[in-house]
Image 1: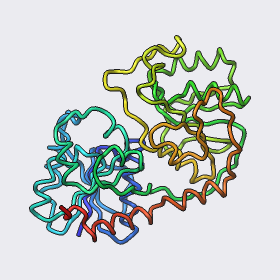
Image 2: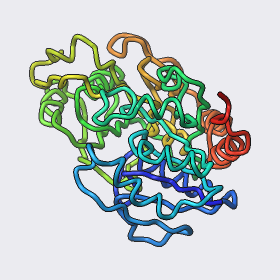
Image 3: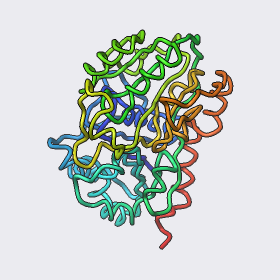
Image 4: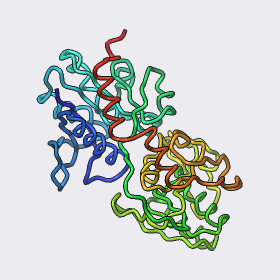
Length: 342
């Protein structure tokens, strides 16, 4: 019985879904499960399981067809499919049902909160086994679900320092401007890792605030400067916040495209920080409260509570997440088959 993990984001691509997909595949493999990854890109470094390239173009529209073309010729009775996003499952459902193959769909955030670009969402809701990364996302589905633990395990703790760290795309929803103002309020330096359309305006804002801010641009996950961090900040705001239509600071000059850009499903970077013993500060937006160490309702004015120490942060991670927990949940659902309950 092979697990077919289907994803458009996988190393060498970077980002939260790519990190999740690699971690999920490694977790299943470590649990003794045969794994075959179907991805748009094949990693440069060898992995302990095969990765096959999905060929195609215009992925936003045609991803369901490219996924089916890769998976179906390799699908056998008794196999299992784990789709990283729901469009990848659309064209697999019929063949999977005929072969009695369960289809699991992971939900990460924008795949559920943005308007769909392809048809088939209702069919996926009816036929798949749903494993969102947070209760927040599960509540949006309107069908039974099981929260899937993140494949994030503790690693060697890093030396703590005095600076804030932001790892995010530099756009309207991630609240990097809020993090800059929080750094000024706390009198702390801040490092911003990421790239995006708001970078120039955010750099101007940091200069006007006289914040000691370093903008690194986008970095691979393994080059994020964790050492010396006091706390990670992810101060995202809701996509319908009035401030987004006319920026709270004219230097930023952003607007939100029709339909918004999606709520934060969980914030995997919060758990990556916790794995290193770094606490995090989040906002009550999307699934962030399920992962952040402390939560602020108003990051421009709320006092920051005392942050937990590194041991407590790592212990909280272990209680809810980890590779072993992820594989245990998936194997249990595959055994019990909730998709067979009508």
